[in-house]
Amino acid sequence: MPGLHSSPALQTVVIQHDTASDFLASSYPTLRRHEASANIVLAHAMKRVSSEAALSGYQFICDSDVEAWLSNADPTSFAPHRAGDTFWLTLWSISQTSAPALELVLSCVNWTLGEYPIFLWTPQTPTALSSDWLVPRIRQIAEHLQSCVPPERVFSVFGMTPLIKTFAWCWTDMTGFSVEPEPFYAACFSYCTGETFRDSDAQLPEGHRLRRAIMQDVESVAQLCKEFADESVYFPLSIERARIEARELIMKGQIWVYDAQGAVATICAVTRNTNRVSAITKVYTTPMWRRKRCAEFLVRDVTARLLFDCGKDCVVLYVGHDNSAQRVYDRVGFAGLCGKSKPEGVEDSLELGFVGTNRGHW
Image (cartoon, rainbow, N blue to C red):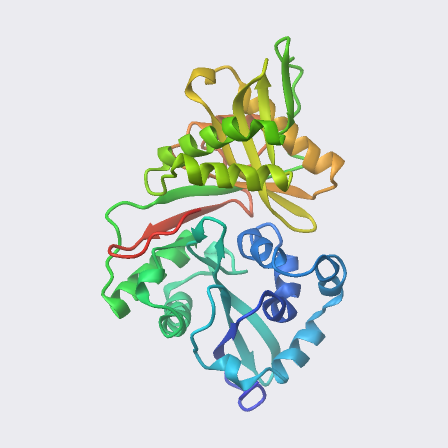
């Protein structure tokens, strides 16, 4: 790495990773230590490497390996360049007197239905994110991003609230693309563990089942995926594209349903998975089945499967600040919701959109 041992003063450097394997080779030890909060960047990268690498290769990378990797990194990684549709930017602090430290991650990735937002993540706690720390680092990584993609690609940015507000201010200042008047999403990041999980003695109505979706459910699941997207306002789906999403979720075994005597009342998708953490990424009940506890039954069942059958340390999710679903998740055991005190790890998150851009979907 240029300048890795050249000065005792603290410096920051941005590295561009054009493949998931390159990103994980340097970043995995830090991401592993913060596996829950890093889920949104780590899971997307893990999907893009081989099963062998995900299950064994990266598990043995330690901090000394990272320092050696950085010392021998390809010099082209430090220069902004146009890559493919998927890449990661990492910002590191370096000095002669301490090991390199990963401070920021930016991911630019896509999926079957198009581009994802730009995701930003930091291992720092919210209380450590002062303006003096944030502004120069966010600007540095934003300047690198500006040289990698046309500004129209950055239709929105999502992550911890202080990161996103700072990025949006810098990006508008740099590109002239203004922020949409209303946030696309203002949410709380929460988690449920074996210790916080809350079981229930409530019984399902006769003839109702909780099960993994099968291919015969495609049309029903697609309809609920469409309704879910349409309620988000900013990322609507046609029924044709909803069918594509439903087929993919079912084929991968990532979606469960509340089956009310053959009618799919509720869906629950789990699409971001790493070794110790799974994320519930979509919960939706069709209007005629609301206020019947369908979502609570299904979310509790899926969460229990992940924690106790699959051995996950925790299950994470995002829920809107004004979303009544907070009550459901709170009753299942997700922490820091419904006005309760927020323990460490429960954070406010924000998605801000930019006017005049090419909107993707997530």
